[in-house]
Every structure is written in structure tokens, then in C-alpha cells.
Image (cartoon, rainbow, N blue to C red; front, side, top):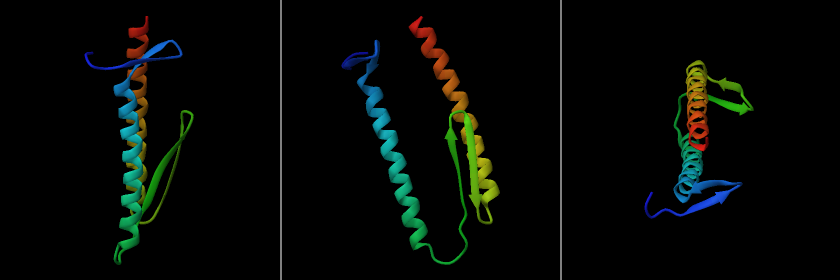
Length: 99
């Protein structure tokens, strides 16, 4: 990889691109939360639904309320399963590279 600085963290070389991607992801989460809050404050009429998934270790805690909560919970569970699968795939790739 040309033009990238590598930093060693606990004996593992980490690219500066990784840090910028993590920072971008965190900032996008905060921007998304802010957009949702603003949209819910200025929403006119109608009903609203809320749903979410919180991970504590490998166990998801799913919650929701409102008329469309079942769809939001299902979407949250699907995204949770996809993220667990992606984590496992990436973990195996890293182990192969390190060995």
C-alpha cells in the first residue's frame, strides 16, 4: 500500500486508512441520529415507530414501539445477524494473514 502510514498497536501493524474509516463511521452514526431526532421533532401528524438493537457481548437486546415496530425489530435483527456474520468473516481473514 503506497502512501499509507502504518502504526504498530500491540504488535499489529494498523493502517492510517483504518483509523480514518472508523472515525468516518462514528461520525456518520452521530449525523444519522441527529437527522432522525430533527425529523421526529418537526414531523407533522401521523404516528411514529421506534425500534432498535443493542448488543451486549454476542446477545442482542431488541426493542420497539409503535404500529410499525415489528418491521423495525425484524430489520434490526437482520442487520444484527449480518454484522455478526461479517465480523466472523473478517476475523478469519485477519487470523489467516497473521499466521
